[in-house]
Image (cartoon, rainbow, N blue to C red; front, side):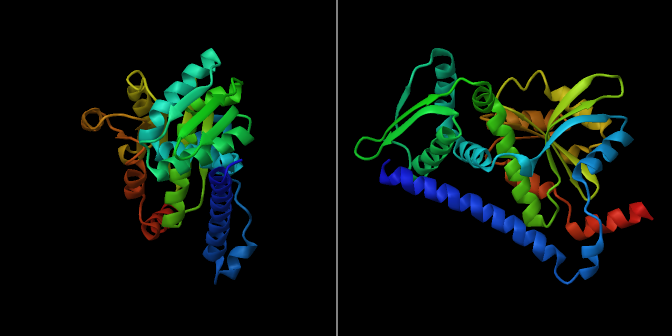
Amino acid sequence: MGELEKLNETLARILVELEKLTAAHGKKSSNDGHDDEKNEPVVNKGELLKGYMQKCGIEVLEYTLFEDINQTLIFSAYNIGYFFCEMDMILKRIKESLKSGNVITINLKDYSQNAITGMCSTFSGMKKLAFLEYYEYKRAPHYILKIKPNPHSKSVAFFNGKWLEYFTAKVVARALREHGYDQNIFVNVKGKMPNGDIFEWDILTLIGGELFSVECKTGDYQRYIEKYVNRAKIMHVPAEHRFLIVAGIDNEAMTGLNDIYDIKVCDTKNFECTFGDALPNIEESCGKQESDNM
């Protein structure tokens, strides 16, 4: 293993540990000076979601908590989303390789060092999790990346779009932490609608008693956007709390969709800012919750 690969792995491990420490510190800090809170019962996140959805006539069948997802997968997915402009072509080559079984060879000479470092960290982690059968990077003066994806079901799902869900969940988690909210993030929620139909939601999060819905598409969003809006209405999710993130969508299409549909359409570049701007002030939210409970 080369020095760059070793450095990338070390950086990846450090970043994952820093995320854990930051989350733990935020949880501890939120209780500082409030000894009475220590005696309060621990809230079951799943019951919060089920209680909200039940009021909408929806039965929650399945869900995954964000914190239960493998952190290496989350880190890799975040890198893919962060460097999507550089990764888009590579993802397409990976999908082709999943069908053909060929090793992918890519010259990264024209990529920034920051992007190369992010890619190497991502693919190194993917190999450790057996999502890649083969990974090699020859640094300067070669700049040659070679990878071969493992065609098992979890790997196929990840490269075909699961990465975008994990990237988005990570962005939501960062925004909630920065604004001081609890991490009530549910991924891949499956529920039974009032008419008996079974639907899935990519990401739901409860913030101050209000539901936010985020759907993720790597393409072919045209057939689904109206369905997303209608389902959000059934769950009493206001327009400003509905999001559709489409990887690689151009600005013209994004602007047009935002003009026509009652949902905020974003790409991987502007979702974090758009979602953060939609979060209510935590003091206002607490006040609203108190008044709702009176």
